[in-house]
Image (cartoon, rainbow, N blue to C red):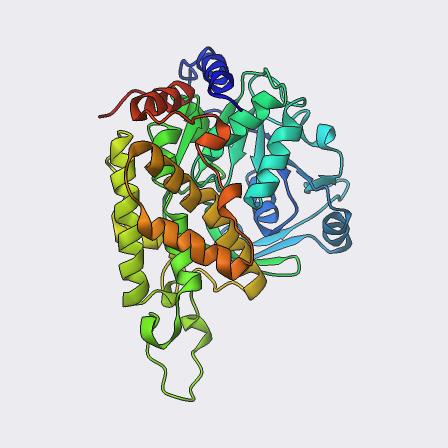
Length: 399
């Protein structure tokens, strides 16, 4: 993936129509959700609750069999409470399929869910199936999600004029028990379109994603991603010295269920690490012209939720936690490290967290991370890197 190849890619994306969509917010009625996990089920249920026709695609037969065998997707807690039928004739229901072209053919909006490696695979195979006017939503997009997807689509031969939306989170935290999802509300999260300026798409998506806040471009939304700097320290750092947050529990006591929250994993020690990581992200972002990033507490609220009550993010099971660490490292920390190298900004805390995550996961995950040089932005010149990213995003230079 040479610099010349990326220049051609940037010019091709930049040549697409960039005028904001005319008229009022778009009303989307045909939705495709790619993936069969809890995030995909959540999005399918939300869209169905809003009256849209929903098709859920999974390449895994077991996921489809489990969905079809049950009574549907049941939502409890916050959000659209109820049971949403699956493949039921004569009533609104989530239609499932194992055929990608059938899922996306008539869709106006296509949601890409799941871990980073699945998003990459879907982006590549989608290239031949997309048509002008479709909207591809990467949720969560983390850092460089939209730019990487655009590159994958371009490599795959996609020439359609589509809009890619990078969303930094879903509207609800989920805890699952079979096909039953219990929801808690998520704080506002950043979202942007590629090409920039298509905010009518974002207005239309707020029907399904009510907590999104428009960013200037995907360059800004990417740097506004705080998932890695919150999730990785919270899940990796604990013990007697570092401690934890939440109420104190007497020796031999058991925490109340309502106090078992992701936010309670973050004590003074983790907060200090988060602040160091956040400072490095702000320093790198500033060199790329992005200076209006959230403060530390806003990042913690967005990615850790509240300690208890409404907005409480559940503590993940060990296997889920490993997946979160992997995706946060690949999709959030590694991109920041990459951008820091081009900007000439040292990021020792970010590098240390990547090393620690790789050690715990038993694999060096940094080479698999989303990095600017992995999609061809390998020039050592900061201004050139900024120009290329701005060209792709269609953004104005800010700084």
